[in-house]
Image (tube, rainbow, N blue to C red; front, top):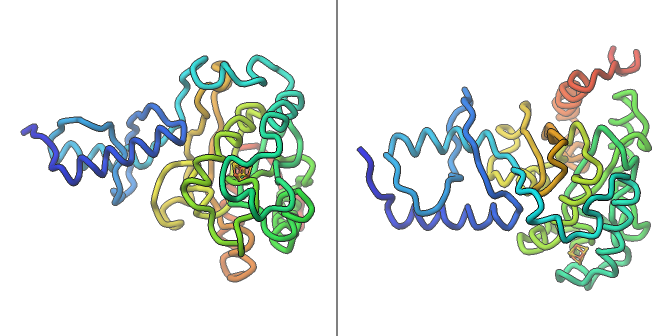
Length: 285
Ligand code: SF4
């Protein structure tokens, strides 16, 4: 039987949809899944659905978040719109970012950490935000966690220059705290534009903060890892089918808990299989 949602649930759904819209997510579709239901809903506001139907929708939608295309509405006014060369497009995005003061993170930063790597990379890693070393050098993942990420990339048979690396926020949060929601919401549109310019085949979200911001999902790492998500920023090239996105542990977490390196390697193997990468013999053994 169809009935109106109770006000509390309706408000929660409306808030979730508002958040998704701010993240650039305007559409959702349903995909069959065998995963267990998640605990948080993503559904259009002001809907009336049956309670059992809602639960089914919640479970399915949680597993199928897609940044859908709404061509020519969001990105058409951006300077890189229509620029086919990814390097040139990234340059225009960097220029547009400028000496950014759009969120409060600009107050404590030394350098903006825009991103680094091959503008035509098939593989893109996205972390949380710069740390002290990155803030000083203006490049992502150059500290201890960066060394580990380099080793992970090398174990895949790739070089750091073969991939593109960026973060959800481009300025260092004070004391290496997690970036706050308003900071992520303000900064991530630039990341979306970078992704749209690079058009990677595969993205790897490093850690829960990156995954939750990219996917607008609030789930533990155990549920986020080990599967693929479809990912396509709003307004990106309609001829690009979008990226597949996998989630793995942040290298800083792996430094704290090296026992999880085997799990991270499984995630990277999933990526390598999809990209047709054969690991060097030593890594494969
Ligand atoms: Fe600008 Fe992003 Fe830095 Fe905030 S974190 S000041 S939005 S570049």
